Length: 155
Image 1 (cartoon, rainbow, N blue to C red):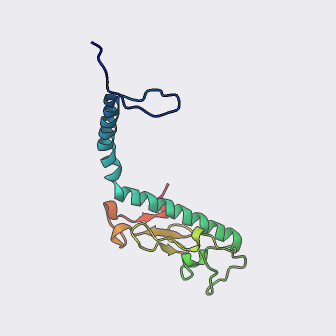
Image 2: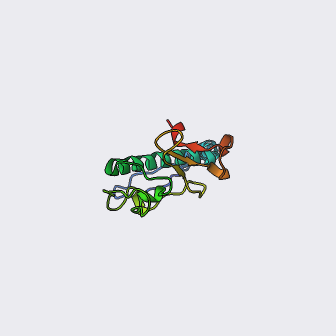
């Protein structure tokens, strides 16, 4: 007596066979095990992901500030703030060669991942300018995940 293995057929023009039900179940079990192991590791660190995103945003804003300085000879003042990167300042030292379209993509100053504005100080205490996010607590200082993210501390 011949033994038959039930096969799931993939309809194609040549009429070739597909995978057995057992093969499909083995693959699904492997995918389930991987998802159960890797998923929590990826999804379990949203605060770390926000902190990484904030550091990248700060680096992007730093680049825009450096382009502003190359065009105009100085950084925007604290009074002018980061808004000077998206629209020409109307107070303080007016930029002689403000770039049409601004210095930031999308024409707006981004908020940090917690919905707070970045803190900008020029001249800065730690360099030509200081750029910070107060993280999830929205207040200066903090420890752990509430620790501020500062441009002079980013490598």
